[in-house]
Length: 176
Image (cartoon, rainbow, N blue to C red; front, side, top):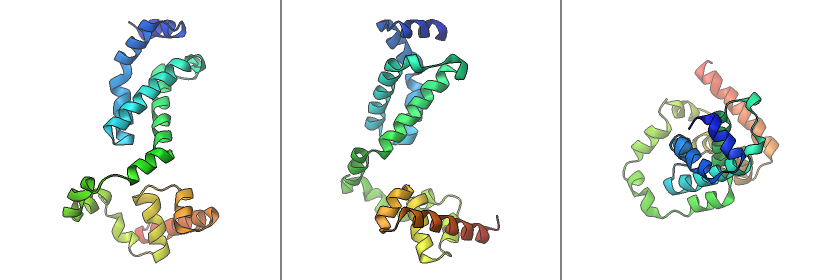
C-alpha cells in the first residue's frame, strides 16, 4: 500500500489503515523515541501514544506544509520530550533501585568518560564554583533552567544570566 492510499484510508478512519500505518512506521518511530527515552518499556508506551495521536489528529496534517513522515516524526519527538519533562517520569527515574547503579559505582571512570567524551569537563573545572554547579546541572545532568533555579533556590533570571556568563567564561578558556 502506498503512502497516499494509506492517508486516504486514515482520513476515512478505516481500521485496516491503522495496522498498515503501524507496520510501515513503528520501527523507525520507536528508534527515535527509544534514543530519547532510554527505557524500552517507557518508549513502547510513548510509541502507542504517538500512534493514537496520529490517528486522532490526522485532520491537522497538511501536505503543503511537509511530508507525512516528517509530521509523524515530529509527533513522536514532541511526545517523547513531553514524557521526559513530565513529573511522573522524572519521579520514576528518581526512585530507581540502587541495583541499577551498582555497575556505575564500580567503575566511575566509565561514567566520566561517557559524560565527558570531548574533555570539556577539564575546562569547566577552571570556572568559578557557582559556574561549575550551574553547568553541571544544565549540561551534564540535563536540568532545565527552571529546574536548576529550583534546585539552587535562585531566581530563574539569575540562572539565565549566570549561565550565559559562565558559557562566555568557558568560551574564553576554549578560545572560541
